[in-house]
Picture 1 (cartoon, rainbow, N blue to C red):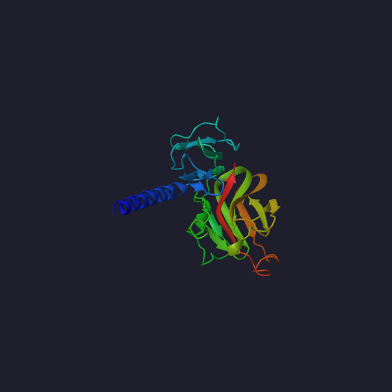
Picture 2: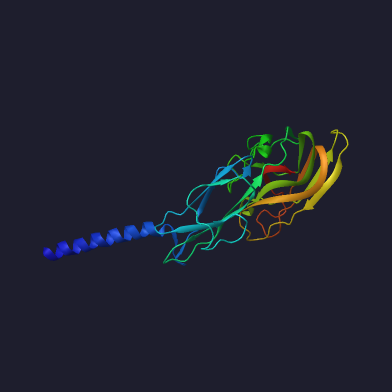
Length: 270
């Protein structure tokens, strides 16, 4: 009987140890025995006045260090101790350290300034009923989309899109920034081409910028992207044509068919 009690005690102790270890391993990459990258949560990625950025990795004795200039952080970088108030655009990078475990990969988040305020936005083609976002104002609401194309912050299209923007007055613009995503498993590719025109009277438009965008390759991960079109022109009315990829590449299951493209934000940068 005594032996049986001892055996049961060992089983209980072992079970508790396994349970404790399994909870701890939730935050570890088991094969590399390294900390996972810190989780980042931002109140907003397009800065109108101020945004709040939080970093976390709930594991004992972890220190998180960060940079705000796009460089890789190390243990000499500032330590994250409280939410950060972000007032300027830039790339924030975070890395976790532990006395006995390998350091984590780097987590990054990019902040953008809101750009010139838009008085009115319109779309010359119809909004796609499957992925309408919150209507055409989705494109100027200062809200960036997540990795989920169905989060309500993305507008999705399987055709070319023409967007018109009216400013309160004539403004000097240096570039147009358009946020898009790629998720080839969902047949979502970057646009093929983006063209920008400017007008003073909404009648006569002059082309001021154009970029052609490289198509994703097989094996590319889901990614959030931003296309910048330099323009350096003054104008009150802006017309932007976003052309989708007409044929999905041959390596894809959807080869030969039209691709989808998703847009979350258009910024006219000063």
